[in-house]
Image (cartoon, one colour):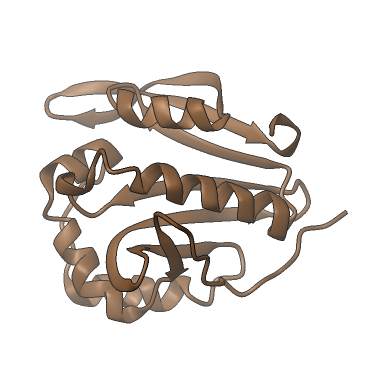
Length: 181
């Protein structure tokens, strides 16, 4: 069985809507990179220009090995974050997962949980994946709790994977299989 090659769809839901990221989202993406807590939790380093983000988005929207979704609220197309299936491996029916909310002010509202669940369903039910893998930094207990609650399992630890704020931090490797649901 192979995975299904699909254009990135719009995935509506009661808590969040997911839609394909577009170049029009670049200004909001740039603003989100100014949120200290969001960038800390994702390990984002460096600075970016609007033009760099626009080029990045132009490249990813046509990449055959990924689905990049803007997280929005139902009925409001405003970008509040992104959730991504990337490095899709057709041979092994596997992909990597990542998510980032645009601002610390959005934490604790269930947006990340709802977006993650919706992408899990899409990955297994529509794309035909068997495995989704992610990394979460050990200091991000909130995200790890969400992933575990949704069915991800810890596979191991990448020791000292991130240098941030003057110290090294571990990355916890987690995965979910289609048979885990």
